[in-house]
Amino acid sequence: MASLIASQFPHISWWCPQLPPSPKAAAALILKGTANWPAERMAVIGSSLGGFYATWLAARRGCKAVLLNPAIDPARDLAKYIGEQSAWHDPAERFYFAPEFVDELRALEVGALSHPQRIWALIAKGDEVLDWREMTARYPDSHQVVMEGGDHAISDFDDHLPQLLNFLDLQPAP
Image (cartoon, rainbow, N blue to C red; front, side):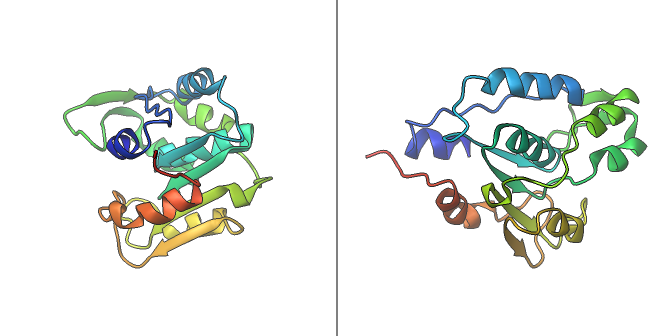
């Protein structure tokens, strides 16, 4: 996504920070980094736990959000992973998931979305980590692309870029 934005949409500001393990610290970083962004022109993209954070930010700011196999109840799902963990995208990278992070995740939960039409969710029925039925049920009034098969990493992500870009109303720079 970063290289696509840089090459075809150089007029778009791209920010993709490494989020800390603490949900409270991650939320603070996200809020600080987007504080001056105009909500009507910004969008957030998040995968898995990032989809949970993207939902939270979209609800808070009223911006568009693209969710890729979003985590629905990470407080429940991650409670069993307290302790040292390896990162999903880089197993060599280690971090500590503290018990208080479960409550921090609960504090970020949002209820019904006031603007579900501003959400576009790409959901794989073959996700080996998260239940696609929970994902579709969480966003019933939002734009959804539910794929047969697929995986948590959305290995065929590039195939869905035209729909994603269309949802975001992104036009390549002239």
